[in-house]
Amino acid sequence: MEVIRETIGRMLEKRAEGSGTKDALIHLETGLRYTYGLLLWDVDRIARGLLKLGLRKGDRVALWAPNVPEWITAQLSLATIGAVLVPVNPGAQQDDLHYILSQTKSRAIIMAKGIENEEYVDMALGGQDRLADLKHIIVFGDTSFPDAMLWSELGCIGEDVDPDTLQQATQQVNPEDPVAIMYTSGTTGRPKGVVLDHVGLINKSICASQRHGLGPEDRLCLFFPLYHMFGNTCIALTALLAGATIIMPCSDFDPPAILSAIGKEHCTAVYGSPSMFSALLEHPQFKKKAWASVKKGIVGGAPCPRPLMERLVDEIGVTGVTVGYGITEASSWITMTQPDDPIELRVSTIGRPLECNEVKIIDPETGKDRGPREKGELCTRGFLMKGYYNMPAATASAIDGQGWFHTGDMAVMDEDGYVRLVGRVKEVIIRDGVEIYPVEVEEVIHQMPEVLEVQVFGFRDTKGKDHVAAWVRLKQGAHRELEQIRKRVEQQLPAEKVPDYFKVVNEFPVTKSGKVQKFRLAQMAEKEYQ
Image (cartoon, rainbow, N blue to C red; front, top):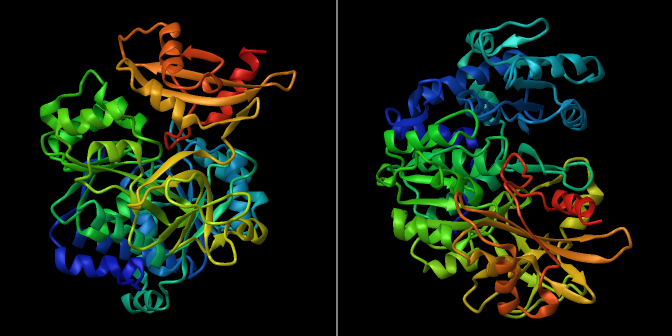
């Protein structure tokens, strides 16, 4: 693959020159519609406003809001002047917000006033006196607040900045400059800020769009949270670089609104986690004919159960849906299946490495390379993060001297390069000396038609003994006795790998991006089975 050495701002400018009148972004909840030409105009207007405030290349600026159209405009405007975007989880609390603003020394925060009321503003203004670097608070909406500027005002003050000044600022931005600091979920300890550059996000996005066949004719339904890389890069940025149209149904995950948007706007591609797809397909308002235009998309964030993939491909007709695997530290995607791969490969593997990076499997203890079909830790190299922000020791432990990032995921790779995940290095369960990979038990239970989702995890009781639990979510209206589930597992797996406990639950604890938090399941099990 030929490396594209450009910046996000200049890539958007080139795209607008050739597709100025084409739809770029449609936000149905607000009724806002941008063509590429109008989007570039608004991005430049906001960029000049940021310069007027004194923000410059390298300055960190936090962005805290649900999926509103201004989120994408702000993202692109910051990239245009070389400022560094710091996305904040919409569900962040005071301590989370303060930690991120303090650790990055953010000079400004661009934000919604809140989800329920004005809680964002209260938290930001309430902690401002402890944040010496925070000089500007910019709020979306039409309600003014003391010591804060409205988003509309930011655009107005930009009119005083000469376009040549913006052009000069844009020309000073280099492809290898930092463009974002995206924080990991922080399931163990404080979250780490992943520093990413223009060249990494651009090349990963373009390479992924080529793998799954995304083009200017496509209309992408975007409902994944924008603060997460899956939303802001794998969907939004990738769509804009490909000249496609982004359809945003709602500010938060709302199945009825999303289902309506897919049919009304004739979306051709849908992206989400398995749990999100299941929520849409199992919703009472789901209509197969409304998905007639949908032919592609990506299932990511967790393994895709076979029944879900079969329903998408065979029953609904989303024939080109792919499965992807990526992490923030690798600037998004690492592997992906082909749109025409057999369903077996799309449910049992995470595909092959993208052309823009390398992948290998190593023994996590010795560091030696593993051969085909041998289990080991997945490592990747190519367009990686610049490092964890202000955490050199953590960076050095994650990226070795040869430039390989150690993902912490256990996997096997076959002779054709297809990779299958078998669990996290830290989530491999050792019970009575036997290694148990959660995914091998989950795959057996997923074969039962009544099962919607299953999570297998380990936990330790008060006496220090290790146990294995399998908690299951059933499809709406379905019923299955726990003893029947246990017998199914006993028939297909050795006795030493059968879970000690089985349970049917209504929901799993998840992050804002829809990823199940197994550590919380373990905490719940420790209390329940003590």
